[in-house]
Amino acid sequence: MSALSLPGSKSMTARALVLSALATGPSRIVRPLHARDTTLMAAALRSLGASINTAGTTAGSATDLPKAPAAPDASTGISANGPATTSAATTSAATNDPIRTDAANRSARTGTASGAASGAASGANAESAVWTIEPGPLRGPATVDVGLAGTVMRFAPPVAALADGTVTFDGDPHARNRPLRPIVEALRSLGVVIDSDGGGLPLVVRGTGAVAGGEAVIDASGSSQFVSGLLLSAPRFSKGLVLRHEGPPVPSAPHLRMTTHMLRAAGAVVDENVPDVWVVEHGQLAGRDWVIEPDLSGAAPFFAAAMVTGGAVTLAGWPRESWQPVGILVDLLTRMGAEVSQDDDGLTVRGTGVLHGIRADLSEVSELTPVIAALAALADSSSSLRGVAHIRGHETDRIAALARELGKVGAGVTEFHDGLDIAPGPLRSAVFETYADHRMAHAAAVIGLVAEGVELSDVACTSKTLPEFPELWAGLVTGS
Ligand SMILES: O=C(O)C1=C[C@@H](OP(=O)(O)O)[C@@H](O)[C@H](O)C1
Ligand SMILES: C=C(OP(=O)(O)O)C(=O)O
Image 1 (cartoon, rainbow, N blue to C red):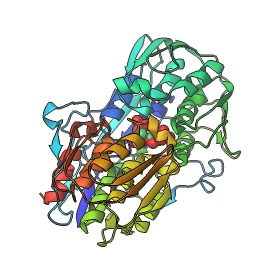
Image 2 (image 1 turned 180 degrees about the vertical axis):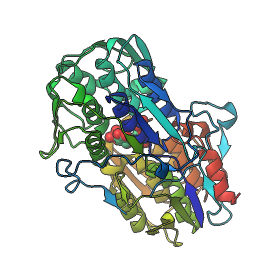
Image 3 (image 1 turned 90 degrees about the vertical axis):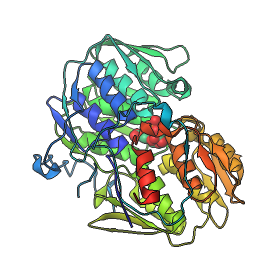
Image 4 (image 1 turned 60 degrees about the vertical axis):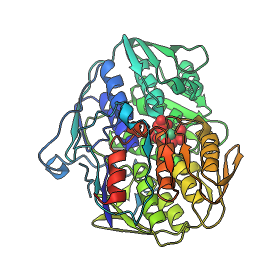
């Protein structure tokens, strides 16, 4: 049995940073994710005027902190769209620079497991990390590096629109290929001046210190982050926001619920009773303490490791109620053969010696596709994964990348516009390319537990969301 201590959710940390920078008073973020994406988000907000200290730790635990105000109940819709039900997180010491691109880490053998996943694995993020945020007047000029972070490229431009001055955005080479036009056009329709040649990066937001807001229509089928980005800043728009989605379904519904939940927890008034329409009233956001849940998507490859090796992994500090899509992940892993349980130690996934293929619509949990696809390539029957057309716009075209790389290691893969059919085949050694995508590295690591001689081309890309992934993985496999 392995105890896995992971840092906080990327998505919750990003939202907490934005809401804190837009609040009327100071905030603290307890057990944040300290990784490239969240460090870039902090840098972006800092450059716009917020004071953010990401070096802080406290000797005590989260329970020493003042209690966060409870989310208002009747008006929150929590009962209708409530958290997934399945304690505070445990994480451990920040020594890594999460923005590093350590050449020594660029290539790594994944290591075939000789036994079951075992041994303790704890993250390099500090167990008692607390970030402090003091909002300030939002102003340019500023330059924002979004890296490859969808959260930064979609959440920060609406904040920049509220700033007084010019804010320039650009990022990693592939960030320029990631969709952005719908949020740019929605912001323009709300009165914001944005220069952007193709509707994507690089772009310049010419803020005047205020956004009129009002009604906007968006096609958010390419990313739920278009909606989340607008909603997070909307309380600061003079007329608030009525946002209507028109187009194919918006993916990643649990991330939208996380957004509206956290907005309400900061005091915003949000109505999402009409499907595909979100109404956010103009109003003040309160500073508060945000206690971040362990990152469920970061845990997925470790759970997969338990499944393919017949071991068990416990994610420590998993809360009884979560705003991450734990119910969907548990259902997927159970259908593939795992046993999943929760007790005071955390959320445990146990391999049973069988691994089944699966037919699944992954639209709600699309960021899990690479790890589920890796499991599918190792299963005892074929799989059909659908509903994820938009992941062609993730860190890389994940459908094409998975088809190519899983094919290299021996699976029979058929690519569809919105997913993959995967037929397991005899495994072969290969260099598994990551395309700078952390979750492709996770997929390679899972395959490498079973297939001899799998080498992943760039393990450093895991610093996007979990800089300590290589150490954690090594600790899990060797039991060190
Ligand atoms: O809002 C968020 O924090 C996220 C939303 C999802 O984006 P998409 O809707 O683009 O898939 C998810 O895949 C991403 O990893 C994080
Ligand atoms: C899609 C992902 O990230 P991003 O927030 O950059 O879109 C992801 O982490 O899988």
